[in-house]
Image (cartoon, rainbow, N blue to C red):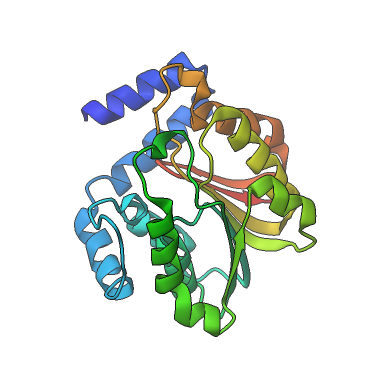
Amino acid sequence: MKKLIRNIFNLILIGTPYYIIINYLKNYFPNYRKKKECFEIEKQIYSNFRSDDISKKWFTNNLYFLKKNLSNRVINNLLEIGSYEGRSALFFLDLFKNSKISCVDTWVGSDEHKEVNFNSIESNFDYNIKSLKDNMQIYKFKMTSDEFFKKNKNKFDFIFVDGDHSNDQVLKDLKNAWSFLNKNGFLLIDDYMWWYYKDLKNNPAFSVNSFIEKNISQINKLIVWHQVLIQKK
């Protein structure tokens, strides 16, 4: 409950529109304390997963939320910005059968990764996705998201944004992702409730709010939790 109060307080401080806060509250309690359900999903997918620190599995805390809201969707072509060791890519390919995913990451990290050995992280990613890469379901792009979007000519049914979490880069990634997202496609934004920077407006939530307000007329569905799920009209 303390975390919920802190999140609401911070959202108010950065000027979050009330309809977004209400959306968050509406989705908080149905997804609260679902660690057991997340663990059951996790066991099915990550039995042979290699990681430098198995306790740092932030993405898996969202498995129940994602499966509940995305099951039975027809998704063929996915893009993710930020892949780390491959947890999200493996989950999406398990959820969306016979789909393909493009994974974009520099494997050098950003502000919050000062103590991380990214040579090892990238090696783990390569190990974890090897069979799927051999089956041509995963395509690896070792570059910045800006570089990828400049070269990219494909449209996607689903885009997951979990790259550099600084304010300016988050907004840039969201704008670029939106332009390459198919109609009725889904944009998933990670770490909406991530408060790393002391200046709250430098965190992802401020950029996400700005993006939602600007594009609200093009949004068919909006689900706000610790992640934000948006369906494009």
